[in-house]
Image 1 (cartoon, rainbow, N blue to C red):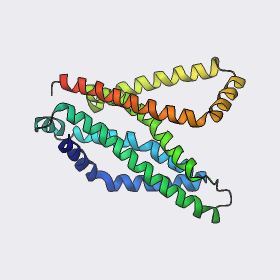
Image 2: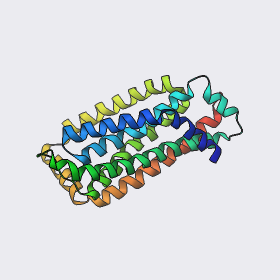
Image 3: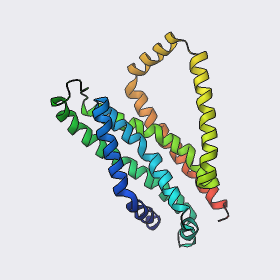
Image 4: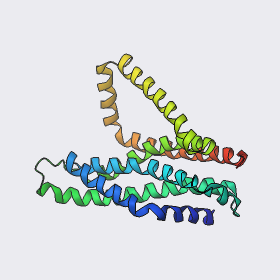
Length: 224
C-alpha cells in the first residue's frame, strides 16, 4: 500500500506546480470578485477532488501507465486504495491551505475593499470542509465509472447520469417544493447547521469508502 501510494504522489508531483498556480489564481480572483474569503475557499476546495481525480485518470491513459503499474508488484486492491487515499490527501491539504489563506486575506482585504464580507475562522474552515465533502460524494459516484470504462467512456456515461439527475432535481424543486417550503427548509438548515455539518462529513466519508470498495471489486475483475 505504501509503495502504491508513493507512486501516486510521484504522479501528483508532475503537475503539482501548475495545480497550485491554478488554485491560487482562482482563489485570489474569486476572493476579489466576490469580496468574500469564505466564498473563495469554498470554490477552491470544491475544485480539488475532481481536478485530482481526472488528472490521475488522464495520466493512467498515457502510454499504458495503468497496465504498467498493474504489472508491478502492487496488489490491485492497493492500486485503487492508493488512488482514493491520494485524492483525499490532496483535498485535505487544500482545505488547510485555503483556510489559512482565507483567514489571512480576511484580515487584510477589508482595508482595501469596502464591501468585503468578513467571516470568522470557523466559518471559513467549516465552509471549506463542507464544500470538499459535497464534491467527494460526486467523486465517489464518478470513480467507479472511470475504473470500469476508462476516462473517455467513463466521462461520457457520467455526463448522462449527472444531466439526468440535474433534470430530475430541477423538476422536483420547481414543481413539488413551494417557495414557503423552501424557506422552511433553509431555516431548518440554519437552525441545525452544526448537526448537518457533522452528518454531511460522516456520510461523505462513508460513501467515499463504499465507492472505494466497489472500485476495488471492479478493478480486480477487469481485464487489462
